[in-house]
Structures are given as structure tokens and as C-alpha cells.
Image (cartoon, rainbow, N blue to C red):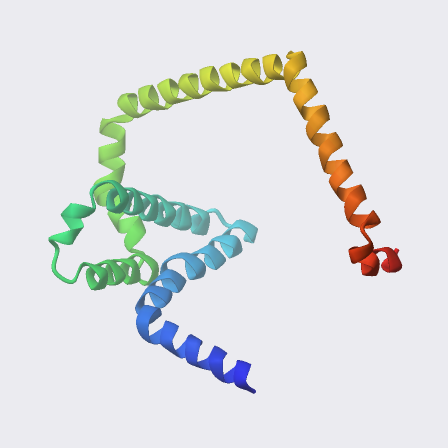
Length: 176
């Protein structure tokens, strides 16, 4: 009874303090996510395109809010403006409109730059992966590391054995 009252109070406080954030998250992430899954499972391709453009715009806005938040800080009532933007994107096919009028031309104009950035990123990641594999391989072949691993495993096994042999832990032995 007390726990139920405590949980109800905690849920009510969470709703009062973070209610708007919960509603925005549900509307901008969970609801479009469910509709995206429905679009993936449908036979038509138009709804797939709609939700891909939505997620593209969502991602671009999220990146902008992450890296240049000070710009949005100066927009009065930004959280409400953002919520209104997402209502427009989801309910009024605003993602298609925004993509057709702004993003398509912008992406086509900078297509070569985007390809270059992707290619440099892929090559950089590939080099880092090769270096990591080389380091892991040398670490595994180093006898000192193997000795440390064996000593650690032996110490762990000894600790487990002492736990089961300790008379203070007789309840553990009885459970065996």
C-alpha cells in the first residue's frame, strides 16, 4: 500500500516536472517509429519515403541541436516551436514538403562534398579498425598478458572456492 502510494506520487511528480518532455518524446520518436515499422511492412513504397524523409529531418535537427544549441537558445519558446514543427512534419506531410522545397536541392548541390566526407570517414574508420585489430593481436600474443590473464582467472577461481568453503557461507553450501 505504501509502495503504491510512493510510486503514484513519483509518477505524478515526474509527469508534472517532465510531462512536456515525455509527450514530445512520445510524439517525435515513439509514434513515428511505430508508423515507420508499419510502413516497412506495407507493400507500398510511398510511405517508406515519407518516413525516411521524416527521420532525415529529425536527425538533422537533432544534430543541429547537439552541436549548435546556442542558436536555438535564442529562439523564444523553442521547445514549443520544435513541437509545432514536429506536428507539421508528422500530421501534415511537412517532411515531404520540407524535403522537396529545401533539402533535395541543398543535398544535390553538395552531393560531391557529401560523398567525399563519407569516403574520408570510411577510410579513417577502416584504418582505426585495422590498427585496433593489430593491437589486439599483439596483446593476445604477448606472453605477459597471457600470464596476467591466467593469474587473474586463478585468483577469481580461488575466491569462488573460498566462498563456497567458508563456514560462514554454509547457506550457500546447503543450497548446492
